[in-house]
Length: 404
Image (cartoon, rainbow, N blue to C red; front, side, top):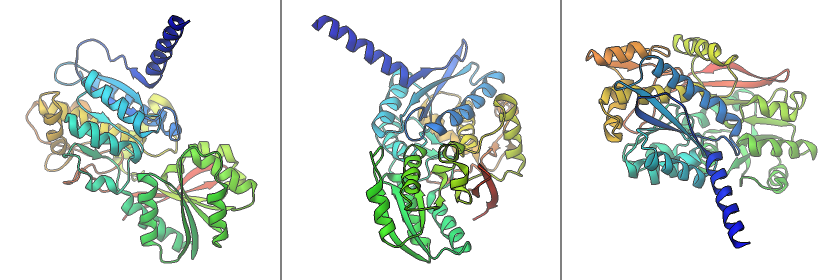
């Protein structure tokens, strides 16, 4: 019996490992590999596959152009499960076992920050997140190995506060996820909103009930609930708020900008709800080029944010590997700003082959991203634009671009 139990434990362990770690088939003759830390399960699962599409699209483009350093670019995917420890475990395997030259991700700041602190900065492998927006990232002691292709929530909080005031809100209650993302964004809203915030209430992930948090905000006198969450918790919070008639008016942030949220709750119940999210200028040449590339490969571009930023992160790592002339993590890190910022010849999404040829000819290049400018500053941050989005006739729709 003990023998059989041991065999069963091994089988389960192998199954878990397979479930959270995937090796992509990038063909023979690989010269470098990158890792993608994606939430294929957990609270951000609805963003995991779409962001991974952006990564895979970029890797396919790179390999269609002959790869990097004379060989193909490989890709390994680690499931963060939207969980800090699972993310760290996946990152360690990608870096120490698979010897990746860079990491794309993670999506949630609550995973990205511990990965940066305990893995990428220690193992000296550059990490480029396409979604982690917490203000904490800016000042994190990461030995300059953490970058991001989306702007900080320090600015999104100001924009959301301005938007709510513009729409006539004078009192709000806030319920926010108790992690780096939720707390950072809640504090940014609190510091910028000129009206009255009747309550600021954190919640923990995967609670059996959110009634206590919702009731506390309701008792504070708020009629509008500002919900800073991921879909995994946000959907049950909305259901409970509506079923118990605690709230009917909602304001969201980027973490809830998903059609899956509307489909789960019902468009009629969320009609008129609105929010903000980092977004490229959809009328820009770079955004249009990316949209065409995505729709050619996968069909209609979904409303989830961060797909374009994941693509940018992957292309930038590939360009940095080529520029560095080596898959070494420190060399790749040191080349990231050189390929993403002026001076240099401009290149857009879909132009990896031309950018690679320019590097091989000894030219300086400046990649303009699908998600916007990717000019990394001293902290690895980028400037950005935002979008006001809303639920209209059962769909998530972008309303207008907001330039800080």
